[in-house]
Image 1 (tube, rainbow, N blue to C red):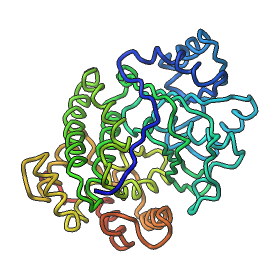
Image 2 (image 1 turned 90 degrees about the horizontal axis):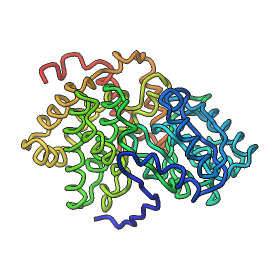
Image 3 (image 1 turned 180 degrees about the horizontal axis):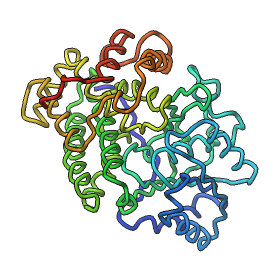
Length: 396
Protein backbone atom coordinates (compact mmCIF):
# COMPACT_ATOMS: atom_id res chain seq x y z
CA UNK A 1 0.00 0.00 0.00
CA UNK A 2 1.03 3.61 -0.57
CA UNK A 3 1.33 5.70 2.59
CA UNK A 4 -1.58 8.06 3.07
CA UNK A 5 -3.22 10.57 5.37
CA UNK A 6 -6.99 10.34 5.48
CA UNK A 7 -8.52 13.53 6.82
CA UNK A 8 -12.00 14.60 5.80
CA UNK A 9 -12.50 17.99 7.45
CA UNK A 10 -15.95 18.41 5.91
CA UNK A 11 -18.95 17.84 8.14
CA UNK A 12 -21.44 15.79 6.09
CA UNK A 13 -25.10 16.34 7.00
CA UNK A 14 -26.80 13.47 5.18
CA UNK A 15 -30.42 12.37 4.93
CA UNK A 16 -33.91 13.00 3.65
CA UNK A 17 -35.12 16.44 4.72
CA UNK A 18 -31.72 17.62 6.02
CA UNK A 19 -31.88 20.69 3.77
CA UNK A 20 -33.95 22.10 6.64
CA UNK A 21 -30.68 22.38 8.64
CA UNK A 22 -29.29 25.04 6.29
CA UNK A 23 -30.04 28.01 8.53
CA UNK A 24 -28.66 26.54 11.75
CA UNK A 25 -25.52 25.28 10.00
CA UNK A 26 -25.00 28.63 8.25
CA UNK A 27 -25.12 30.70 11.43
CA UNK A 28 -22.32 28.57 12.90
CA UNK A 29 -20.08 29.58 10.00
CA UNK A 30 -20.62 33.28 9.43
CA UNK A 31 -22.87 36.31 9.46
CA UNK A 32 -23.14 37.26 5.80
CA UNK A 33 -23.08 34.82 2.88
CA UNK A 34 -22.72 34.98 -0.85
CA UNK A 35 -25.52 32.64 -1.90
CA UNK A 36 -24.35 31.00 -5.14
CA UNK A 37 -26.78 29.13 -7.41
CA UNK A 38 -27.29 28.20 -11.03
CA UNK A 39 -29.28 30.42 -13.34
CA UNK A 40 -32.58 28.56 -13.17
CA UNK A 41 -33.02 25.46 -10.97
CA UNK A 42 -32.76 26.99 -7.50
CA UNK A 43 -35.35 29.62 -8.38
CA UNK A 44 -37.81 27.42 -10.29
CA UNK A 45 -37.65 24.59 -7.74
CA UNK A 46 -38.31 26.91 -4.81
CA UNK A 47 -35.02 26.01 -3.12
CA UNK A 48 -33.73 29.56 -3.26
CA UNK A 49 -36.86 30.91 -1.59
CA UNK A 50 -36.63 28.25 1.14
CA UNK A 51 -32.94 28.96 1.65
CA UNK A 52 -33.54 32.69 2.02
CA UNK A 53 -36.21 32.09 4.65
CA UNK A 54 -33.99 29.74 6.65
CA UNK A 55 -31.11 32.22 6.55
CA UNK A 56 -33.36 35.10 7.57
CA UNK A 57 -34.88 33.07 10.42
CA UNK A 58 -31.38 32.43 11.73
CA UNK A 59 -30.12 36.00 11.41
CA UNK A 60 -27.78 35.34 8.50
CA UNK A 61 -27.49 38.09 5.87
CA UNK A 62 -26.99 37.15 2.23
CA UNK A 63 -26.20 38.40 -1.25
CA UNK A 64 -27.52 36.30 -4.15
CA UNK A 65 -25.29 35.34 -7.08
CA UNK A 66 -27.27 33.25 -9.59
CA UNK A 67 -24.98 33.34 -12.62
CA UNK A 68 -23.34 29.90 -12.66
CA UNK A 69 -23.89 27.75 -15.75
CA UNK A 70 -22.83 24.19 -16.57
CA UNK A 71 -19.06 23.76 -16.86
CA UNK A 72 -18.45 26.96 -14.82
CA UNK A 73 -16.25 29.58 -16.43
CA UNK A 74 -13.44 31.70 -15.08
CA UNK A 75 -15.19 34.99 -15.91
CA UNK A 76 -18.22 33.94 -13.86
CA UNK A 77 -16.06 32.98 -10.88
CA UNK A 78 -14.14 36.26 -11.05
CA UNK A 79 -17.44 38.17 -11.19
CA UNK A 80 -18.69 36.29 -8.13
CA UNK A 81 -15.48 37.04 -6.26
CA UNK A 82 -15.80 40.74 -7.00
CA UNK A 83 -19.41 40.84 -5.81
CA UNK A 84 -18.50 38.94 -2.65
CA UNK A 85 -15.63 41.33 -1.97
CA UNK A 86 -17.72 44.45 -2.56
CA UNK A 87 -20.45 43.21 -0.21
CA UNK A 88 -18.17 42.12 2.62
CA UNK A 89 -19.41 38.53 2.88
CA UNK A 90 -17.60 36.22 5.27
CA UNK A 91 -18.59 32.84 3.81
CA UNK A 92 -20.02 31.17 0.71
CA UNK A 93 -23.15 29.04 0.36
CA UNK A 94 -23.41 27.00 -2.85
CA UNK A 95 -26.76 25.39 -3.69
CA UNK A 96 -26.69 23.22 -6.79
CA UNK A 97 -24.78 20.54 -8.62
CA UNK A 98 -21.05 20.17 -9.11
CA UNK A 99 -20.77 23.29 -11.28
CA UNK A 100 -22.24 25.52 -8.57
CA UNK A 101 -20.14 24.01 -5.78
CA UNK A 102 -16.94 24.21 -7.86
CA UNK A 103 -17.68 27.83 -8.72
CA UNK A 104 -18.26 28.49 -5.00
CA UNK A 105 -14.80 27.09 -4.24
CA UNK A 106 -13.23 29.32 -6.86
CA UNK A 107 -15.05 32.36 -5.48
CA UNK A 108 -13.92 31.48 -1.95
CA UNK A 109 -10.33 31.71 -3.17
CA UNK A 110 -10.46 34.85 -5.32
CA UNK A 111 -12.50 36.97 -2.91
CA UNK A 112 -9.55 36.89 -0.51
CA UNK A 113 -6.69 37.26 -2.97
CA UNK A 114 -8.31 39.55 -5.52
CA UNK A 115 -6.43 37.59 -8.21
CA UNK A 116 -8.13 36.09 -11.29
CA UNK A 117 -9.17 32.51 -10.63
CA UNK A 118 -7.18 31.17 -13.57
CA UNK A 119 -3.92 32.09 -11.82
CA UNK A 120 -4.57 29.02 -9.65
CA UNK A 121 -4.98 26.83 -12.74
CA UNK A 122 -1.80 27.65 -14.62
CA UNK A 123 0.68 24.80 -15.00
CA UNK A 124 2.51 25.46 -12.69
CA UNK A 125 0.08 27.72 -10.77
CA UNK A 126 0.94 31.40 -10.42
CA UNK A 127 -0.95 31.63 -7.13
CA UNK A 128 -1.62 29.28 -4.23
CA UNK A 129 -4.95 29.26 -2.42
CA UNK A 130 -4.69 31.16 0.84
CA UNK A 131 -5.58 29.46 4.11
CA UNK A 132 -7.79 32.52 4.62
CA UNK A 133 -10.07 31.43 1.77
CA UNK A 134 -13.68 31.94 2.80
CA UNK A 135 -15.43 28.92 4.34
CA UNK A 136 -17.96 27.11 2.18
CA UNK A 137 -21.32 25.52 2.94
CA UNK A 138 -22.39 23.22 0.12
CA UNK A 139 -25.93 22.02 -0.57
CA UNK A 140 -25.90 19.30 -3.23
CA UNK A 141 -28.84 18.88 -5.59
CA UNK A 142 -27.37 16.29 -8.00
CA UNK A 143 -25.54 13.03 -7.23
CA UNK A 144 -22.53 13.14 -9.54
CA UNK A 145 -19.23 14.92 -8.98
CA UNK A 146 -18.66 14.33 -5.26
CA UNK A 147 -17.27 17.85 -4.94
CA UNK A 148 -19.05 18.15 -1.59
CA UNK A 149 -16.39 15.97 0.06
CA UNK A 150 -13.14 17.14 -1.53
CA UNK A 151 -11.07 20.30 -2.07
CA UNK A 152 -11.09 20.23 -5.88
CA UNK A 153 -12.77 22.65 -8.29
CA UNK A 154 -12.94 22.30 -12.07
CA UNK A 155 -13.16 25.55 -14.04
CA UNK A 156 -13.11 26.43 -17.77
CA UNK A 157 -11.04 29.36 -19.02
CA UNK A 158 -13.53 31.68 -20.72
CA UNK A 159 -10.97 32.75 -23.34
CA UNK A 160 -8.85 29.70 -24.16
CA UNK A 161 -11.56 27.07 -23.38
CA UNK A 162 -9.05 25.08 -21.32
CA UNK A 163 -10.84 23.12 -18.60
CA UNK A 164 -8.81 22.11 -15.58
CA UNK A 165 -9.04 20.97 -12.00
CA UNK A 166 -7.32 22.54 -9.02
CA UNK A 167 -7.31 21.37 -5.41
CA UNK A 168 -6.27 23.00 -2.14
CA UNK A 169 -7.01 22.03 1.45
CA UNK A 170 -8.75 25.35 2.34
CA UNK A 171 -11.39 24.59 -0.31
CA UNK A 172 -12.87 21.61 1.48
CA UNK A 173 -16.44 22.66 2.29
CA UNK A 174 -16.79 23.28 5.99
CA UNK A 175 -20.26 21.70 5.88
CA UNK A 176 -22.00 19.79 3.10
CA UNK A 177 -25.71 19.07 3.23
CA UNK A 178 -26.52 15.98 1.16
CA UNK A 179 -30.31 15.64 1.04
CA UNK A 180 -31.38 12.92 -1.43
CA UNK A 181 -34.85 14.50 -1.69
CA UNK A 182 -33.25 17.39 -3.57
CA UNK A 183 -32.16 14.99 -6.31
CA UNK A 184 -35.62 13.56 -7.03
CA UNK A 185 -36.31 16.09 -9.77
CA UNK A 186 -33.13 15.15 -11.66
CA UNK A 187 -34.26 13.80 -15.07
CA UNK A 188 -33.27 10.29 -16.14
CA UNK A 189 -30.63 11.49 -18.62
CA UNK A 190 -28.92 13.74 -16.08
CA UNK A 191 -29.19 10.98 -13.46
CA UNK A 192 -27.33 8.62 -15.79
CA UNK A 193 -24.66 11.23 -16.49
CA UNK A 194 -24.09 11.65 -12.77
CA UNK A 195 -23.85 7.89 -12.26
CA UNK A 196 -21.21 7.42 -14.96
CA UNK A 197 -19.20 10.26 -13.40
CA UNK A 198 -19.21 8.71 -9.91
CA UNK A 199 -18.53 5.24 -11.35
CA UNK A 200 -15.45 6.50 -13.21
CA UNK A 201 -14.29 8.45 -10.15
CA UNK A 202 -14.02 5.16 -8.28
CA UNK A 203 -12.69 3.15 -11.23
CA UNK A 204 -9.83 5.40 -12.32
CA UNK A 205 -7.41 4.92 -9.43
CA UNK A 206 -8.55 1.27 -9.22
CA UNK A 207 -7.20 0.81 -12.74
CA UNK A 208 -4.29 3.24 -12.83
CA UNK A 209 -2.48 2.57 -9.54
CA UNK A 210 0.11 -0.19 -9.21
CA UNK A 211 -0.05 -0.33 -5.41
CA UNK A 212 -1.43 -3.41 -3.68
CA UNK A 213 -4.38 -2.24 -1.57
CA UNK A 214 -6.95 -5.04 -1.27
CA UNK A 215 -9.10 -3.19 1.31
CA UNK A 216 -9.45 -0.20 -1.00
CA UNK A 217 -10.15 -2.58 -3.88
CA UNK A 218 -13.04 -4.20 -2.00
CA UNK A 219 -14.48 -0.79 -1.05
CA UNK A 220 -14.20 0.40 -4.65
CA UNK A 221 -15.77 -2.72 -6.10
CA UNK A 222 -18.71 -2.42 -3.71
CA UNK A 223 -19.28 1.21 -4.65
CA UNK A 224 -19.07 0.48 -8.38
CA UNK A 225 -21.41 -2.49 -8.12
CA UNK A 226 -24.02 -0.45 -6.27
CA UNK A 227 -23.60 2.52 -8.63
CA UNK A 228 -24.46 0.23 -11.54
CA UNK A 229 -27.42 -1.36 -9.77
CA UNK A 230 -28.91 1.75 -8.16
CA UNK A 231 -28.16 3.90 -11.19
CA UNK A 232 -30.15 1.67 -13.53
CA UNK A 233 -33.05 1.53 -11.08
CA UNK A 234 -33.12 5.33 -10.70
CA UNK A 235 -32.79 5.80 -14.47
CA UNK A 236 -35.87 3.66 -15.05
CA UNK A 237 -37.81 5.16 -12.13
CA UNK A 238 -36.47 8.57 -11.02
CA UNK A 239 -38.91 8.64 -8.09
CA UNK A 240 -37.21 5.78 -6.21
CA UNK A 241 -35.93 7.61 -3.12
CA UNK A 242 -34.03 4.55 -1.86
CA UNK A 243 -31.96 4.60 -5.06
CA UNK A 244 -31.46 8.36 -4.74
CA UNK A 245 -30.17 7.87 -1.20
CA UNK A 246 -27.67 5.24 -2.33
CA UNK A 247 -26.46 7.31 -5.29
CA UNK A 248 -26.05 10.42 -3.15
CA UNK A 249 -23.86 8.54 -0.68
CA UNK A 250 -21.82 6.81 -3.42
CA UNK A 251 -21.20 10.19 -5.07
CA UNK A 252 -20.03 11.69 -1.78
CA UNK A 253 -17.73 8.78 -0.95
CA UNK A 254 -16.30 8.40 -4.46
CA UNK A 255 -13.87 11.33 -4.25
CA UNK A 256 -13.67 11.62 -0.46
CA UNK A 257 -10.29 9.88 -0.46
CA UNK A 258 -11.60 6.74 1.22
CA UNK A 259 -12.02 4.37 -1.77
CA UNK A 260 -8.47 4.97 -3.05
CA UNK A 261 -6.66 5.29 0.28
CA UNK A 262 -3.44 3.30 -0.04
CA UNK A 263 -3.26 3.43 -3.81
CA UNK A 264 -2.57 6.74 -5.47
CA UNK A 265 -3.43 6.85 -9.13
CA UNK A 266 -4.02 9.45 -11.84
CA UNK A 267 -7.37 10.21 -13.47
CA UNK A 268 -6.65 9.88 -17.21
CA UNK A 269 -10.26 9.50 -18.36
CA UNK A 270 -11.16 12.82 -16.75
CA UNK A 271 -8.03 14.40 -18.21
CA UNK A 272 -9.13 13.30 -21.70
CA UNK A 273 -12.71 14.47 -21.20
CA UNK A 274 -12.07 17.98 -19.88
CA UNK A 275 -11.05 19.42 -23.28
CA UNK A 276 -14.26 18.04 -24.80
CA UNK A 277 -16.71 19.86 -22.51
CA UNK A 278 -14.31 22.82 -22.36
CA UNK A 279 -14.44 23.44 -26.10
CA UNK A 280 -18.04 22.21 -26.37
CA UNK A 281 -19.72 23.61 -23.23
CA UNK A 282 -23.13 22.25 -24.27
CA UNK A 283 -21.76 18.73 -23.81
CA UNK A 284 -22.13 17.81 -20.15
CA UNK A 285 -19.13 16.39 -18.35
CA UNK A 286 -20.91 13.09 -17.75
CA UNK A 287 -21.92 12.74 -21.40
CA UNK A 288 -18.35 13.49 -22.50
CA UNK A 289 -17.04 10.83 -20.12
CA UNK A 290 -19.55 8.33 -21.48
CA UNK A 291 -18.38 8.98 -25.05
CA UNK A 292 -14.68 8.29 -24.44
CA UNK A 293 -14.95 5.69 -21.66
CA UNK A 294 -15.44 2.57 -23.83
CA UNK A 295 -12.65 3.69 -26.17
CA UNK A 296 -10.27 4.29 -23.27
CA UNK A 297 -10.90 0.81 -21.87
CA UNK A 298 -10.62 -0.85 -25.28
CA UNK A 299 -7.40 0.93 -26.31
CA UNK A 300 -5.66 0.34 -22.96
CA UNK A 301 -6.99 -3.18 -22.24
CA UNK A 302 -3.57 -4.79 -22.62
CA UNK A 303 -1.99 -2.39 -20.12
CA UNK A 304 -4.96 -2.78 -17.77
CA UNK A 305 -5.34 -6.52 -18.30
CA UNK A 306 -4.73 -7.70 -14.73
CA UNK A 307 -6.92 -5.01 -13.18
CA UNK A 308 -9.71 -5.64 -15.69
CA UNK A 309 -9.54 -9.35 -14.87
CA UNK A 310 -9.98 -8.52 -11.18
CA UNK A 311 -12.81 -6.09 -11.93
CA UNK A 312 -14.49 -8.66 -14.17
CA UNK A 313 -14.20 -11.39 -11.56
CA UNK A 314 -15.60 -9.27 -8.71
CA UNK A 315 -18.38 -7.50 -10.63
CA UNK A 316 -19.29 -9.75 -13.55
CA UNK A 317 -18.03 -13.28 -12.76
CA UNK A 318 -15.62 -13.30 -15.71
CA UNK A 319 -11.85 -13.14 -15.88
CA UNK A 320 -11.85 -11.88 -19.46
CA UNK A 321 -10.82 -8.20 -19.77
CA UNK A 322 -12.80 -7.80 -23.00
CA UNK A 323 -15.92 -9.35 -21.50
CA UNK A 324 -15.62 -7.04 -18.49
CA UNK A 325 -15.51 -4.08 -20.88
CA UNK A 326 -18.52 -5.42 -22.77
CA UNK A 327 -20.50 -5.84 -19.54
CA UNK A 328 -19.84 -2.18 -18.68
CA UNK A 329 -20.92 -1.10 -22.17
CA UNK A 330 -24.07 -3.23 -21.93
CA UNK A 331 -24.92 -1.43 -18.69
CA UNK A 332 -24.22 1.94 -20.33
CA UNK A 333 -26.52 1.06 -23.22
CA UNK A 334 -29.30 0.22 -20.77
CA UNK A 335 -29.02 3.77 -19.40
CA UNK A 336 -28.78 5.40 -22.84
CA UNK A 337 -25.19 6.48 -22.14
CA UNK A 338 -23.43 4.77 -25.02
CA UNK A 339 -22.61 7.37 -27.67
CA UNK A 340 -19.78 8.63 -29.85
CA UNK A 341 -18.16 12.04 -30.04
CA UNK A 342 -19.61 12.35 -33.53
CA UNK A 343 -23.10 11.78 -32.09
CA UNK A 344 -22.45 14.65 -29.67
CA UNK A 345 -21.57 17.08 -32.47
CA UNK A 346 -17.80 17.09 -32.05
CA UNK A 347 -15.78 17.94 -35.17
CA UNK A 348 -13.01 15.52 -36.10
CA UNK A 349 -10.54 18.36 -36.61
CA UNK A 350 -10.78 19.18 -32.90
CA UNK A 351 -9.43 15.79 -31.77
CA UNK A 352 -5.78 16.86 -32.02
CA UNK A 353 -6.61 20.02 -30.08
CA UNK A 354 -8.20 17.86 -27.37
CA UNK A 355 -4.98 15.84 -27.14
CA UNK A 356 -2.76 18.93 -26.92
CA UNK A 357 -4.94 20.43 -24.17
CA UNK A 358 -4.99 17.20 -22.15
CA UNK A 359 -1.19 16.97 -22.41
CA UNK A 360 -0.80 20.61 -21.35
CA UNK A 361 -3.06 20.01 -18.35
CA UNK A 362 -0.76 17.13 -17.32
CA UNK A 363 2.30 19.38 -17.28
CA UNK A 364 3.14 19.65 -20.98
CA UNK A 365 5.60 16.73 -21.02
CA UNK A 366 4.03 15.03 -24.03
CA UNK A 367 1.94 12.57 -22.02
CA UNK A 368 -1.20 12.07 -19.97
CA UNK A 369 -0.50 10.17 -16.78
CA UNK A 370 -2.16 6.75 -16.46
CA UNK A 371 -1.12 3.26 -15.33
CA UNK A 372 1.44 3.65 -18.12
CA UNK A 373 1.82 7.18 -19.53
CA UNK A 374 -0.25 7.81 -22.63
CA UNK A 375 1.65 9.49 -25.48
CA UNK A 376 -0.06 11.58 -28.14
CA UNK A 377 -0.38 8.65 -30.56
CA UNK A 378 -2.27 6.60 -27.95
CA UNK A 379 -4.37 9.59 -26.93
CA UNK A 380 -5.32 10.24 -30.55
CA UNK A 381 -6.23 6.58 -31.00
CA UNK A 382 -8.59 6.85 -28.01
CA UNK A 383 -10.22 9.98 -29.43
CA UNK A 384 -10.42 8.53 -32.96
CA UNK A 385 -12.13 5.35 -31.76
CA UNK A 386 -14.52 7.39 -29.62
CA UNK A 387 -15.31 9.71 -32.53
CA UNK A 388 -17.15 6.94 -34.38
CA UNK A 389 -17.41 3.50 -32.81
CA UNK A 390 -18.85 2.12 -36.08
CA UNK A 391 -19.37 -1.62 -35.51
CA UNK A 392 -16.90 -2.02 -32.63
CA UNK A 393 -19.46 -2.72 -29.90
CA UNK A 394 -22.51 -3.16 -32.10
CA UNK A 395 -23.25 -6.68 -30.80
CA UNK A 396 -22.87 -5.76 -27.12
